[in-house]
Length: 480
Ligand SMILES: *Cc1c(COP(=O)(O)O)cnc(C)c1O
Image 1: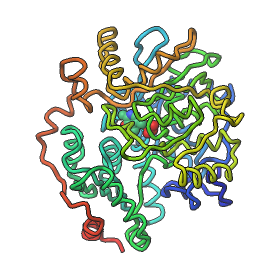
Image 2 (image 1 turned 180 degrees about the horizontal axis):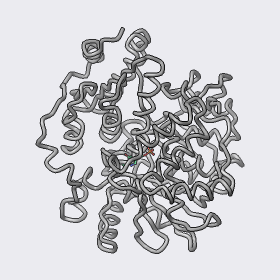
Image 3 (image 1 turned 90 degrees about the horizontal axis):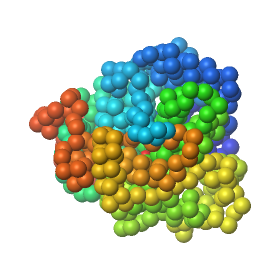
Image 4 (image 1 turned 30 degrees about the vertical axis):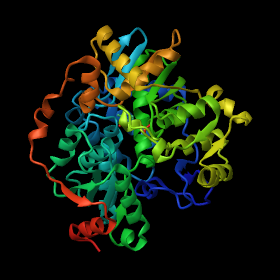
């Protein structure tokens, strides 16, 4: 399997080459040259693999999916990596991603039972093991530099803690994360994890990461890398739970299901698109956004308009507060018949100069719904509160704010005879303030997080200064 860039660069690469890279050299995103097709026989076999494996079923299914895309890691090694990643010990349940039924044909798929209680663990835990494996094979080291306002940073740290050859330097805005999120990250005592609290806002953190990455000598000398959401391996890992959700909601491969996905950077739902292109019988992919409705606007009108920072709302589902959807280019590439030069004109040129492009009058736009199954909807703070309350009253199930956006929008697209699966992307404890506002009581807290706020913290507070962060990396990094 070879990978190409969405912007038409002639190079083709193998999986392990793009594993540690971010963007393609032309600024595009990597995609496989073609989507492997899962025929009826294979789908039936995979159902058996998933169902008969008990605790190992999910890991075995992951191995089947990943094998179709990764041919430069020996099968036995890839199998071992999957088995090590998807365990009951890490995810707290043998099913790894159990379905919870709310109503007849209406389900939540629990993706947030991993170490940081958000769905990003599903991919990041695999990435940690893949990085350690590939770096050891090459005899290299990597310093991951990232900026976070919460979920991504903690998922990356819990995935990379104690991994050989990897260090993490994670910048977060000082005093702006929730006490629970701060406790999650800052209580890690692993030598290779460095928390840096920047006196500023999230954008200041992100600017420092950009400045360091643009300092090419420093970047090369200190082997600076990232784990952001455009990484193909993360997206690939997420494809697996669409299959796992399907097998749990159906008894026969003749049935179809729909998924609703609380969306920000379009990484999660793009994995659903890949699963559908492989042949998984998905009827509809529902994109749910919050007040930051870049994606809902596109699927309704064909206009893709990135927002300025000032027009990006701070909401009570903060992990969906995006100004542009960084994985969206992958879907548009497929929508445009994989025309790299058109994608380059839209994402490389039009977005840069005008901040928008429009496909509404292009005949191909209708195919987003008719051929690719995409529809969308939007949810607001008031909707979120009402949905959390309603779900609790009707089913005694407490859902987090992001999942609530999904449940709200999913209800607009229910079809008789087609099970609807809403992806649960975080647990309520991560966003306690809004749960209290909705329900008047504190969310449940998994036992392993009892009094996490009282643990000792390991964090360095620093001014918003690129040179200071570089000096800190130099000081803590024996490479170069
Ligand atoms: C990251 C995140 C999302 C958005 O996922 P994308 O892949 O960026 O679309 C939704 N909910 C939660 C809880 C998240 O952490």
